[in-house]
Amino acid sequence: MPIIIWQLVFFVFPLIFLVVMSFWLVINYRMVPGWDTVNWTKMYSKGYFWDTYWRTLAYAMIATITTTILAFPCSFALAFKVSATLRRWALFFLIVPFFTSYLVRIYSWQIFLNDNGIFNRMFDYIGLGPFHLLNNFFGTLVGYLTLCLPLAVVLQLISLANVDRNLIEAAHNLGCGRLKTVFLVIVPMAKIGIILGAVFTFILSFGDFVSPYYLGGSKPPTLSILIIDTTKSGQQWPRAAVVAVTMIITLLAIMFASVSAAYRKKP
Image (cartoon, rainbow, N blue to C red):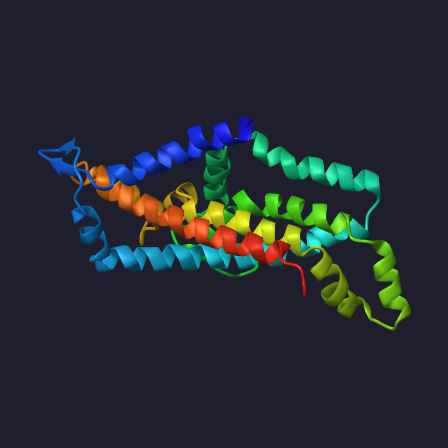
């Protein structure tokens, strides 16, 4: 019951209000309750909306793939190659970044990524650069990794740590090499944590505003930035609600499909 109440109060009711608001009208910079599909028609007929939608989707997918690939060696090493004490300390340091504001961490990256920043100074010493690492997709991706990589490592580690070592030993005894054992035994047994880590990465990246705005330069925009721009353009909160509802529907579809794949058992 507490979980149901929590979902109703903080998710279902706000979502219903958002859907209802998307049918309201803005007259003389004031929202007027109504039931008109003009906001949906206007937004869905605009080319820039779909350009932004597919761009945001692509950004989130690239961030998800990159984060999953980078997180797996780390989580694998923590699960199989280090002592329990070192693993606990590693978990502690993975969780510590969440004690600080995400916005503060993103601002700190500007010191490293700008044209006169620490990274370009290091490249200059070896005769390279300067490289434009800020106000582009690379900067946005760095922000996504800052937000999602520690979480992906933790989720993968939880699944990898529960893999039955006897099955790994049996695979080796049957002549399965190390790399083959990883992909044929370990990854399938840890797929829940891997998929859930990817899902959380996609959700956080798809809806993130801070990284594409402060590290990506906000141009071209993502859907979260488009929501801000829409509300500033004549107080068009209903049209911004259309964007938000579209984002939520996309995330729900991907989330349910991914979770179903994670928990699906082989026939």
